[in-house]
Length: 135
Image (cartoon, rainbow, N blue to C red):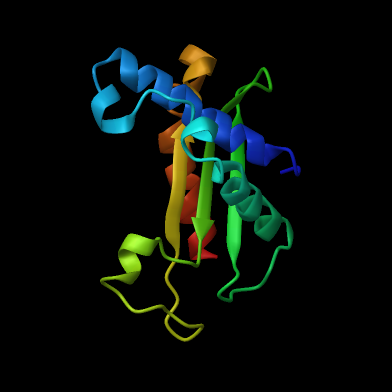
């Protein structure tokens, strides 16, 4: 990944919001681009990419972010694996430590703007994630 890939992750969210609103899910997911709705969205995606680029060994700061591209080098999907649980999980499960590690799939979105090129990219990234966490 490169530093600017954090913007791709936010773009993928925008592509989904746009698509979801066209299929009648606008009330649930909203209709505004993610950066308008949540100005800190780019900060979160930037944090994931920066933490991933450190290639830290397993710790509470461990994170891996990936962007998949099609044969034409068009970005089609993104995935983030994180050692930090989402806030809603912390209310149910205690934070893990290095002796009891969990890896959370924090982000998995395809790029709806990529059209047919993104078809199946989510499944490919899920399988890729399984391989990553087995290592």
